[in-house]
Image (cartoon, rainbow, N blue to C red):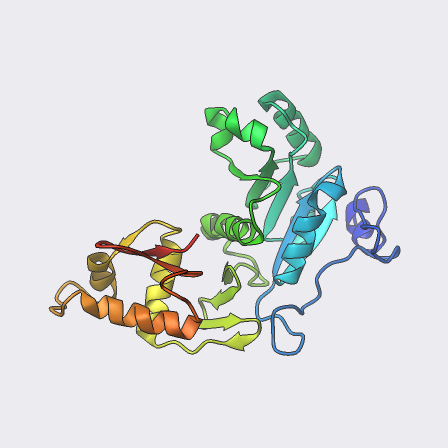
Length: 272
């Protein structure tokens, strides 16, 4: 067992407890969270790399409250990937003011190339002056504007890299999250705060198409084509009828949308 793997059981130089953690263990979210009783419906495991844990405490708390198992390390060793079945690495680069500092910090936190999805937390200053090469990475301004924004960007990073990481034995990438909704694609189920939301097949397909669009507008015609096929001859208002039903089941409000926003005269998109 490597020294870092041992630190998961007995934290030392490579992993951090926050002040309110027990001193004899690295806190990770157990298999409980958003669920009936205490059982999580899906669990995603993330490694949070930082040399200043206070800067990411809010992220740690938010992720653990949303069914992530989160482990904190000063650096990441690739051999931990198979040992921990981690699905995502989040690297804290908020102390970097330019690309030179970013690259140096990257070398310190990531000892070797990882095949896992990596989301870099960066300052607004660095993002505003980011080079083309840096913009090719998955970046999130931290602190985030809101918890919903943070969760969406984390989940988006996982989805983008899902084909490459799809061989995870523990199925940790199966779950999809949007705000407080938990979507299990394999089981075609939707849950919120542990309670199932019962959708028809068409309502489920509409929601998945909107999620897969990642905020881009889906026209009524496009939704009709993908769900009912091109030979469907009904009027486009059939989409509106099903969206209205979907919104009702989600408890959404067209006037102040939380999940689905209307683009007048065009179609629908995910709400901000």
